[in-house]
Image 1 (tube, rainbow, N blue to C red):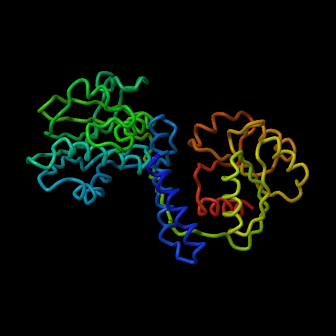
Image 2 (spheres, rainbow, N blue to C red):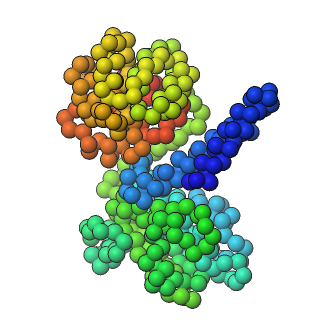
Image 3 (spheres, one colour):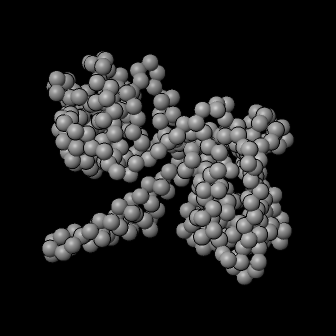
Amino acid sequence: MNNILAAIMGNAELAQFNALDGLPVQQELKNIIGGSARAADLCKQMLAYSGQGMFVKSEVNITTLVEKELQLIDISISKNISLKLELSNVLPSVCADKTQMQQIIMNLVTNAAESIGEEKQGDITIMTTAIQADSKALACPYIDAIREPGEYVLLEVTDNGCGMDKATMGKIFDPFFTTKFTGRGLGMSAVLGIVRAHDGTIQIDSKPGRGTCFKILLPVSASDDVDQVTADDKTVRPHNLSRTILVVDDEMMVRKVVERLLGRLGCKVMLAADGKEAVDVFRRHRQEIDVVLLDMTMPVMGGKEALKQLRDLDASLPVFICSGYRHESVADMFDEVQPSGFLQKPFSLNVLSEMLMDLANRG
């Protein structure tokens, strides 16, 4: 993370110098955006490791997902490695976050390729199948929760690489642990967090010189309905919308950035540094304020109490909670007074635009 921040800060300083000298700043800005995206991704991995990551779940067929990832998998492994597929053509879906499942697949394949190396011929086998798992098959020393026996989808990645001894296996899920070079990120610890958050389990069979086998078990979805989640990178900006939005956050930099983003969408913005100040501002401008973006954790008065007091003043006021945690975790913190929605930090101009469009569609 420090390396990423160093790159962001360095490019920001270069952009500042270039701007003062009348030179182009496009490349530095591009580097800043790219570095910020990498930092956000690392934060999401850390949240996934802790089980607090945000997941957009839909019905996912793991066999189909592996097949779609084959081109990227081929690029990721050396030419000396043969890839063998044993994929079930008839596989029930799992309720999962597609992106996180892709991360699991790529991390397991990458680890397998690195264990083989580039000097000798090796094999990686990816298998998918459905099994009836009993309590023994679901037992996992790395996950405390007890999984209920039943039908599960098995994703298995096996290699004939160097294998691991017991000491290495005992540390493989530690954050930032690696047997390779430093700076690899969360790796297998993120995989564990994702599996844990999807009510699954993971097993490892490995011995030095005899390769490694990772088994991921995920519960079969209880629904046959397919919920397709699509993403559109193009920002859809609301038309003819003039909203006044109260932005509440204890970080001044966050307040100012969100203010400028909303300004690009044609909104008027009022600012507050904590919940108490937010309630005071709303009392004075309640006839003007259309929406409140409310940070969850703040000094003086946090988001939960501020929401309650704001709703006491106006029961129909749209209030969106802003947090780095997934919305399921934040929702559990509220009782009878629920927010209108959740925005996971960091959020983009596109997310704010979609929020405003959704409000407009609600009427």
